[in-house]
Image (cartoon, rainbow, N blue to C red; front, top):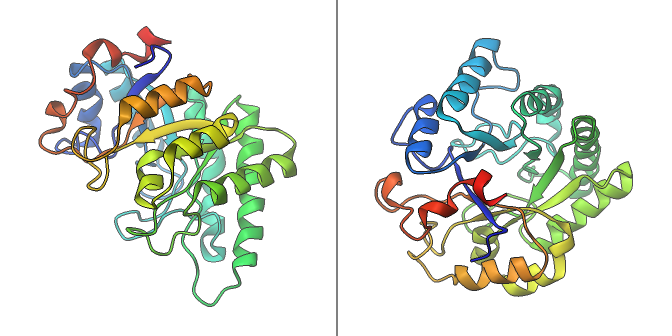
Length: 278
């Protein structure tokens, strides 16, 4: 396992046994120094008190936020992003400066923009055009803070209405946004779980798109548990990422089999400190 790779926890799916504001301390107790989050607030423009409370929780625990999703709607209710949906576009735009500003305040330089579900009866081209407009706005805002915008493919086995279900589809959107903005700060979020769930050849994806990968997330298939609970060969995949030139972060975005704190046996404790591996 290359020392260039840095591992951190997604606190929206791990340590959910605890309230959100207690999760950073639990992550620190497990040896982590970095974390990522799905948008953790109700609505696109949370109150300052909510933003401040999360910042304090992370700071008190010594956890650096390294990844943040834009508001993606009601995720438990089935939403998977807002930016391609005409009825939700204003909500996404209202969130852009809030999310980018909060990320900048916490030193976070990666923002994930979930593309959104298909709208029945609407021409897919209309959604694609709107998505390009909104992603360009997000990329421009992120650029002002030295941050990148991430676009990922999500499996349609579990998310049947999601529109980007392959690495190729996600990378085409990444390339279109970069062409439209000329900024080059939109990247591919290579989520190995979602791609494997769609039956993609993961080594081929890594080889083909290594130059566009801005972040990697992992979970084992088929159950989305921690590495070792399924069928993926993570040692090989990590080696392939390193050989392809990826030296960035690996987000642990899995549903732990058992308590979260007991799910890290596959990852040596010394590998859980992002600062130590930087």
